[in-house]
Length: 464
Image (cartoon, rainbow, N blue to C red; front, side):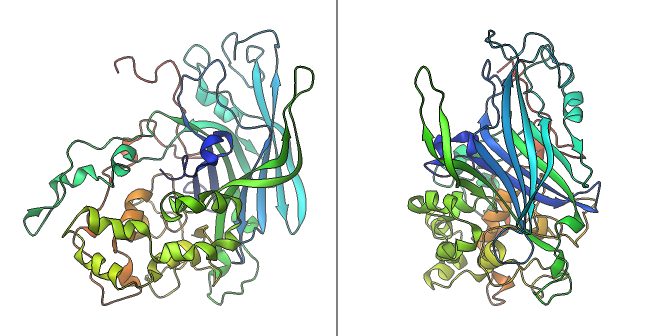
């Protein structure tokens, strides 16, 4: 999956586990950029009486680099607190929750939002309420109204939301991790020969599951750099984005009298830039290390981008299907195309009218050229589909990042840096066979864009 349970240690700590990150110029407000980071993955909707929530002991941050050094220039920091209304009740709610201050709601979360820039912290908001989890039609009968109440426009120009949403990521997880099986290719032929043997329809493994999202919509002039050092005319419009979660270094477990306490400085336990980077690129032995480091240290992992393990597995798993990729692998040529996409951005001149290069520092970030306007009719394959407003130019909620990443690794993007290379016929058709249409909760046309979370009463469906 994009980054759900992608490393051994963070898999044990879902409250701090970043699962997906999105960064895009807002389609309904193109003078702003929307940044969304999801946490607490794989939530079953029927989670009571202890429904899912953010961690009061976790510092959640969305970082923006606008000068290409892999270090944050602007950070939006979310910190949460939980309050119990009735300490003598075991219930999450004792009646319908029709407002954010409902007396029926027993366990409420609030958060503060801090903007860190130029070494200074500016508290933008304090004790903003989150919406409740979507319990069911009797407990949360007008959930969309609660979300509207929990979406705030700040005096500094930002819009902000923090709360439960439907997981918008789509992947046939069971097939992919069963030795790279790609079910829809049972019908794909090359030169009259069927090349894939898998049977059955692809299944979206994350459908009807929820996440907790922190989302902020920011005016472009609050994320862009005033002056550029890259040289390209529009380079001041290019930003790098990643999210992180941090915990205190020391936790002291209490006894029956004293409560648990956490102390010491914060230390990073999770981060996420490009989807699937730690999941697919970083080897098992280094995944926890990667989660603890800033993007500015990602030169340590460049060797795994230059020669990704999956690129070598494809010809082995599907003999005679990827002969050109196999030759490229055996030549031991570093994959400069993947380095550009994932670590430095795509330089000008490789794709007409497009660049999101941030310089020579190798860092895993979602790179977004904010000068490229939103597309009226987005292509799910983003830049590979000719839509320059999509992944890997940032990431929109409907972008088919799994198919895009698989096709790039299979060799589709090699001609950007090597005009003599001819991608295999199958490379441009690699896909798990899913799209945004396979997400039951539809995406929204406005902030916070991710769909209404699934409620516990109707999910899973009674007919299942």
